[in-house]
Image 1 (cartoon, rainbow, N blue to C red):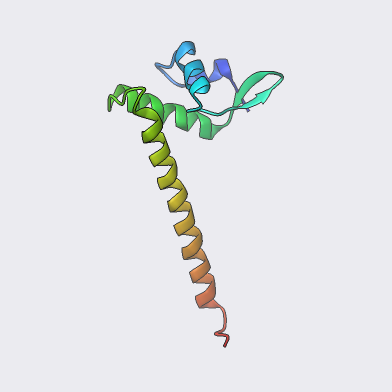
Image 2 (cartoon, rainbow, N blue to C red; image 1 turned 120 degrees about the horizontal axis):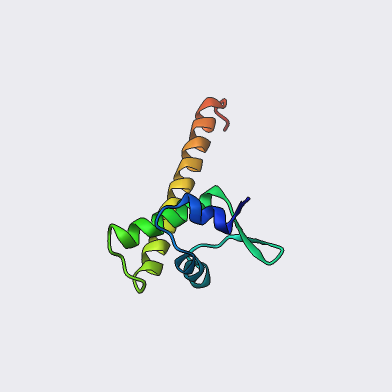
Length: 98
């Protein structure tokens, strides 16, 4: 688990107030340990994504929830398709049953 201060060190350009706002908005959902947020690598990746969306693509705060929701749905769909492809591969390898 990664502490709050470590996140700020690892993600260049991310300030404490901005990270706290993202947590308050629910854009980043770290676990809690002893009343403090603790992050996993996936949380850091999401922070980098949000920062990139804001800084490079100029996505504003009003649009951010929609953009994040669409990206989350896209990733979920990709996971489902991957599972389906794996299941099809397994079924092709199994003897044909009637």
